Image 1: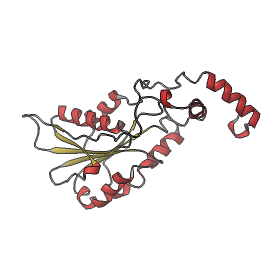
Image 2: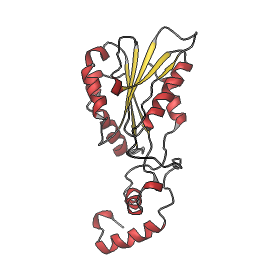
Image 3: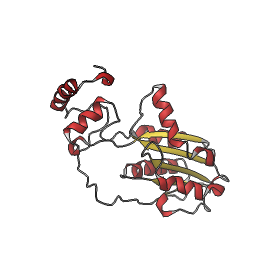
Image 4: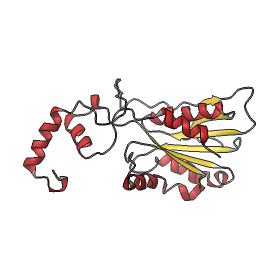
Length: 219
């Protein structure tokens, strides 16, 4: 059935079939087993990873999040970088972290509306001069365009179009985030999400991929 030529009758019939099997996940992501409260404020903690044997170079991992999934990604990056010998501070961008104490910077944001969150873009603009004095890496946490096709790759590369020219990053990373929670999503929306392959569902964060990038990233 071609979605471009979908008649109303076909649409309703397909809806009924899809709704009947809507509880089955179509992705390899881990299911979400806990319910969230959309109106509850999202926690944006800071972390410091440092030991007596860490190098003098200090890295800032600054993140922006909308629903909280980017927090875990930033924390995993900081912890893994510390295992490589770096002293690392992980801080939310909303706290406007001072760049003066850092020799390397990693900036990341959740993706909403096919771009970084506004506070993340504003942070880069406000600190552009300082960021141009140190090596900078960028990462995105997103739930759409996760595939290997040329189209998918081009679309996720475009997430950084507003930021890339400002800092000339040494490297970029794109990590899958947390998508639709089937337990909290109306059946029709689940069908629409899956039928048109809008994005992943459940927790799609691949911790092995995230940590592997932190183990090898060169700044």
